[in-house]
Length: 427
Image: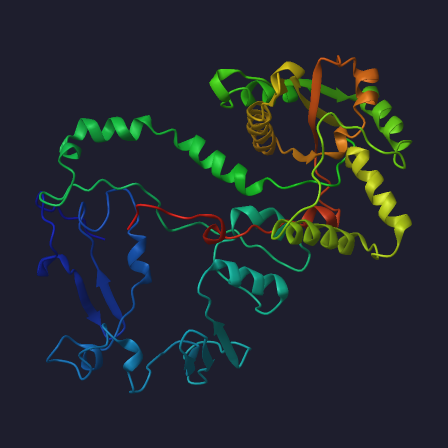
């Protein structure tokens, strides 16, 4: 592979940049120019995806027999050419491509006689088809949010391979169409140095990994890890920097004491500090119902089996046997202000709760945000000594996920962005 210098600000491809040379009937040499095709030190992987086409069919205008193939390849009516283990059989636009085995292939013949490639408009339907068994495999990268689920699914095999691609942020340095200040190399270097690249990767992965865990291992979570998580979570924003949150963390014999006490209250009416949601309108009602039905299905609980439904509800009251629970509280004076309910402090506590749950994934921990954890605040005040001047808002069960339990393979769906976002003032 030869590397050749390129003149500064040379933006348009020139004939000398096309460095492909026929060696013999079976070999072609590709050469790449440093600074033009790819930066030095990086394998020019993008060119591995290029394909060879016979010049007498697809040659430039005037040389080939099909001049417009690059503008409208679907209008091609000639013969499809291929020398691989499979050859073209049928194509349905926006639906599928069917290949059949090429029995004249020079190498070992593959076992399947036909291979069907289904076409999907985006990754969502593609991975739904994979999960439902409608397709056998895909080489598309698994969504980060579903990667752990796929690994834990006994019906799926997840392969991990080196990525030949390169992800990068590029600066537009075009002499006429670019952004002039970026011509300054020192500025570009300063921008690159200021980006916390590891943090970006960590936070994106954490958002993708986080999900509600409903079965925990008994292994205790060390206090120093919980402390690290809470200290980092304190960086959450808050209204006028009030930082209203306070934490009560229970583990060991204290959480066991709470478990036993609330288990005896399962048939009693709750008296949570804040009112729980009442009736839901659509589409919220359907979303809530869907998760309940799916969980009953996973646990094998018929809708009419009230005894099993009660036992499942009891599991929630017991924090799904998590080894620790973090209660988030606020001062009562922040919520009740004269004749006004101040919801901003509750909103702030939601932000710190999200921080806790995302940070937990970085330690291999799972969480679930629970209303069930705060249904009986009198018990919590008696066992943990939380004063009546504090409102107990929510509990976060935390621990090491039991990945063998099928309930932890479940992940709720999300409404698409187009359903919940409207854009104003954009093209």
